[in-house]
Structure formats: C-alpha cells, structure tokens
Amino acid sequence: MTALSYLDISKSALKHNLEVFREIVGTHVKLGIAIKGNAYGHGLVEVARALSEIGVDYFYLNAAFEAEQLRQAGIKTPLLMIGYTPLSDLKSIVELDGEVVVYNLESLKALAELKKKVKIHLKIETGNHRQGILLEDLPDFIEFIKRYESLKLQGVSTHFADIEDDRKHHYAHEQLEIFDKAIGLLEEEGLAPHLKHCANTAATLLMPETYFDLVRVGIGIYGLWPSPSVKNVFLESHPDIKLKPVLSWKTLVAQMKPVKKGDLIGYGCTYQMPHDGQIAVLPVGYYDGYSRALSNKGEVLIRGKRAPVIGRVCMNMIMVDVTGIPDLKLEEEVVLIGRQGDEAITAEEMAAWQDTINYEVVTRIGAHVERRVVK
Ligand SMILES: *Cc1c(COP(=O)(O)O)cnc(C)c1O
Image (cartoon, rainbow, N blue to C red):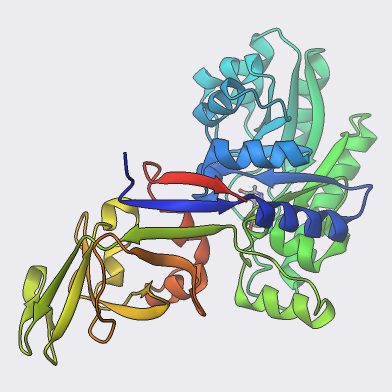
C-alpha cells in the first residue's frame, strides 16, 4: 500500500554520525546509543538494525516492549533500561538479557527475588531531580547489593540537567562532584562498578571529563544538535565536523484547487486568501505528528519551493498555498522535513515554528508512519 506520508532513514548518515562520535570519544570509551522514543521517531527496529550492523556497545531503552521488539528482531546488543521499569516487567527484561537502571529499593528487592543473575546500574541523584538515589540513601543500596550474589553491579550513572543552555557548565560540574562522591562510596565498599556513565550528547560534545567508561548519545546520532548553544560552542573548536540529519519526512499532493481572493481556508476559517491562487491538500495531519501548532505557521517544500501551511492543521490533512508553483501533478512529492532541490526544512526550523525543540518534533512523528531505510 502507498504510504500517505513516510520517512526516509539514511543509513549512510547514521553511519557518518556514529563515526563522528567514535572519533570524539576515542577507542577506550564505550559508545551507547539512546533509541528510546521509537529511536527519536526514526523507527526503533530500523535504527537498531542499522546501528548494530555497524557496531555499538549499548542501546538505551525506556520501556519493556522496546526490549522485546529488539530481541525478536534478532538484535543481540546489550540493552539498558534507563526509564522506570515496572516491578512486573523486571522478570521479562532479565529473561531478554537486558540490564536495568535502579534507583529504588523496591526494584532491587524484586530483582533479587528473581534469583537470577542480573546486571544493574545504580542511578545517582546529582541535581536533575528526576530519577536517582540520594547520596545519603546509597549505603542502604550498597548493603542490599552485598547481600545478594545474583545482583551484579555493572554500572553507576547520573544525568545532567543543564549543559544544553549553560555555556559555563557550572551546574554540570557540581553534579559531577556529587557523582564522584557516590563512586567513592561504592569503591570504599568494594563495589567498584565496571561502567561509570553520565554523558548525553551535549556532554559528549563539550565535556570530555564526563566520559568515564561509557557515553549515552541520543539526539546527535540522528544528526541533530542538542541545542543551538551546544552546536555553536562545539563548532568553535571543531569547525570541520558535521552531523548529518538522518530523517526526511515526505508526503504527496492529494488534491489541487483554485481559490479566490477572500476565500476562507479550513476549520475555524482562520485564514483568508489574500489573492486569487491555487492551494494543495496534503494527506498528513496532527495524527501523524504534524503538530496543530503549525496551523498558519508551517511551510513545506514542493518542487524545491516553500509553500506555507494555510488554515488549521487537521487530523489527517493540511492545506498549503501553492500559488506560483504551476502545473502541479497529483501525488507529486512534498517534503515536510528534509531537502528538496536547493531548499531544506530542518527539524530545528519546524521546532521553532511551534515553539518547541527538535527532540519533540522528531519523536512525535507517529509510529504508524512508514520508515524506509535508504542508502
Ligand atoms: C535520553 C537520554 C540520554 C540521551 O540524551 P541526548 O540529549 O539525546 O543525547 C542520555 N541519558 C539518559 C538518562 C536519557 O534519558
């Protein structure tokens, strides 16, 4: 069946970005990739297959069903669950040979009760105030782990709150100090973890002191920057390095129609044609992840030219003004994100139109939208 909209996932861009990050971290640091959120919207299994063929040391996941899908697809790369894994899912994760980030005693107890060897990573609260064990509670975890042979402390981790927006990284350094204290406590107790890890993409790009044994790169592997500030600071010292966006999102012309000056377009009649002209209807909408916030704000590419979204984004359709792009054919290609001719629309640009970040733009692309892995 013909997809109403689809993603081209560029394998060569993925490979290029992976090589860039390998080069940045060097050979003695392991490289793990976050593929939660349907691989940031790029397609979980498609991306995991492509990356595991090239070779990565870890995949980071958020939910148990993701681990199941990867193992069913025959992917053998070590998996680490970095979100909250419900107690009732822990058994499945262990059976799938997955590793688990732990930050509460309930999860630790549930894992011990499985009586199976399990690799755990303790998550330390260092200032993000999301997940994590408070330093003062760490001795309880240490005592518990020591009591159970089956619990193997594979790693210790934390997560930064503010590298994307703060050029000086004061807060990240405060977090690192607390992380170091936690590592010290573990080592004193003879529980030196094999893998210490805390660096996301922003830290990997800007703060080599955060690498330890393993990094956790997400957004960068998809060829997107964590923030404009991280991009600018990084490129000041590495002007030759490029990240290549991996994803293009395309749709097709579903209908063309002449309109007259004064005609009202779409639900709520929020747009009035300022001139006689032509509009095209495109079969993509907020169901697919084309945000309703793009109503009267977005742009698409047709024949290498920009055409503005006019009227409200509907569930399954949008309208664009194609006056000045004559003789369009039915089902002609339209680019929502990506390049066409000399023009390009980036995830960052689309994010700016709807007042959000590139992360949200790509992860929100519906899981039902077909992903095609291309060269
Ligand atoms: C998502 C996530 C990452 C990756 O972050 P990016 O900014 O996409 O590189 C790393 N660590 C944790 C704990 C995460 O949740």
